Amino acid sequence: MSTIHIDIGKEFGDSLGPRFRKLGDHSGEEFRDDMLEPAFLKAETVVIHLDAIKTFSASFFEEAFGGLARKYGSKATLAKVRFSAVQRAYLIPMIQEWMTDVEMPA
Image (cartoon, rainbow, N blue to C red):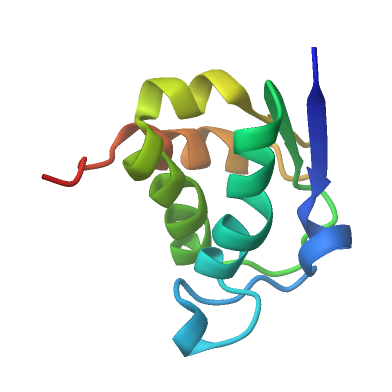
């Protein structure tokens, strides 16, 4: 079983940016397109480590993880993407809710 681990704070940036690339660096769109989606398509499980993050915005997480769920469906996304956090464990249910509460494109 193949698993890819992504430590957002160490591998992407510890200060997460806005929703879209055009709004600034380290955006949710950039993370989803450049790191998360390739890992999602390659591995059976993707584990996202959250503890090394220093600053973040809800729009980053909604675009990265909600955006992935909009593209591939909530059920498939939640089945493959896992989260690891001790200090930032409170983020996990919020992110999972954004992955669940998505509108699928028509």
